[in-house]
Length: 131
Image 1 (cartoon, helix red, strand yellow):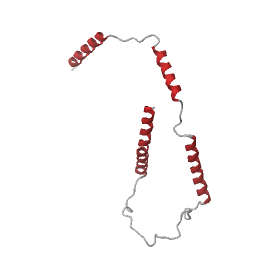
Image 2 (cartoon, one colour; image 1 turned 180 degrees about the vertical axis):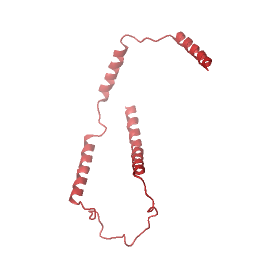
Image 3 (tube, helix red, strand yellow; image 1 turned 60 degrees about the horizontal axis):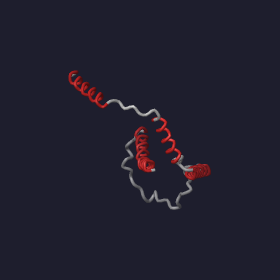
Image 4 (cartoon, one colour; image 1 turned 45 degrees about the vertical axis):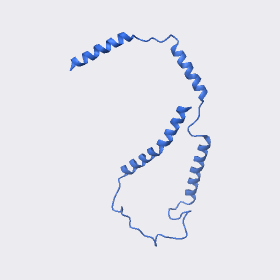
C-alpha cells in the first residue's frame, strides 16, 4: 500500500521541482488591496431591504396588532360573513384520526420557508454577480 503512494510522492516532487515556485512582486498585496478598494467604492452600499420596504412591513405589523387588540375575541371576527354556511355544508375530515407531532410541523414549516427563500436568494446572487 505504501509503495503505491511512494511512486505518487516521487512524481509530485519531480513536477514541483520542474515547475519551480512562483514569487509575486513585492507590491503584490498593495496592488490587490487598492483594486479591491476601487471596486468597493464603485459599488457602494445597498441594503437588502430598503427603507420603504421596512416602512411597509412595520405599518402592516402595527395594523395587524391594532386590529387584534381592538377585536381580541376569537369568536367575533371583522371578516365574519352574515351567512353561516357551516351548517348547510358539512364535510367529514378524513384526517381527523391522525395526530401530527410538533417536530414534524416545525420541520415542514422550516422546509417551506427554505423553499420560498431559494428563488429570492438566487435572484439576489445573480444580480450581485452581474453588477
